[in-house]
Image 1 (cartoon, rainbow, N blue to C red):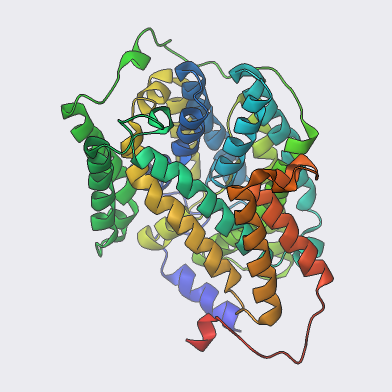
Image 2: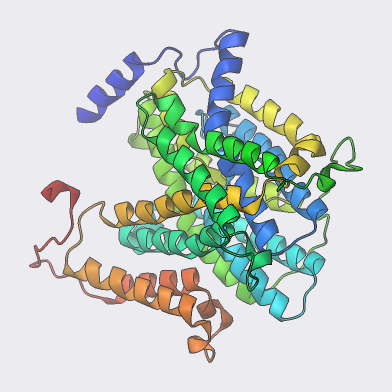
Length: 461
């Protein structure tokens, strides 16, 4: 009964329901509003991976372009629901931030082995391509995975992802990885510029208007970019001799596979399934759709299957893996537009933008401190999101022990990766080591039904 009331209330608040077809102008405005919420998080992962791993400008620009193309293709599949593929809701696909830290860690490991940029990217995308099939398979065994990967396990992994990325954000804050070890790193002009961006983002984040709040990161980056222009810190050389169009080329950099890297990527893929489940459930709720029962289970299965299939397509084209984005649920609530047909406009805009390389190359000119000013906050929020997931049902003694041990192992590996040098290489990655520890403890530690203690719980506040 509670579900029916919530469903009816959500549907009553909608201006355009799921199957409605808004007029062209209304659809276009709604599509642009959604793009404001996802555009920066969509292109930022490729920029971060490219900058940190010191990839050539052409390669980073291609990753950015393919992120847009793949997001457009994925969104089109999700909103149209072709047979068993797609949720049939306004579910927007974008690059999965969970893979940023993993890609950087694996990339550094490959560099230490002597791999050049081409071999490194072909390996990273190769293991991501194979790993995406795990998500396709997971769509059909969701009820069984829930017994193994609990909110505590998922929360620990998200927390470790956020904490590991903060190092990347604060390094860009000080000027970027290319300046580490020099007197320039941490100089006033870099820290000052990054602080200005952070201040703008925080200022917009405090505003009451939901659209302004969601646009805060984008506004902060634009403001920081303008200041960087006046400071002479923007290098436009990447825009010279840029081709008119980018032609998506499957396995442009070749295909290589590394089993140890696959174990790390596979772990993150399986854990990202539950992020997708949460986002799809929220989309159903705000769209006035059922979020229980067989009809919802079919939407859920189709949405998760699409997540996996889209990541197969994305990594084959040269993008980082994709996932369903949560930001758009806020846009649906704010605008009252839940029409899946708006998603078709979003898809077309993304594909067109990705096909013209001037867009991808333009983003590569953003100075590291400008990115760092926004990323410190965004990565911190990822860590906080992990804490919130852990606290979903409160934390009793057993869950506290699992979380504490897994975070301790994960952060320990981040500080001293050689501590597990006698174990398989997967244990030298902080996120994977912490995630595996959480899964194993969750399976081994007995449940104490008499333990009613709750250390942290939203219900006890």
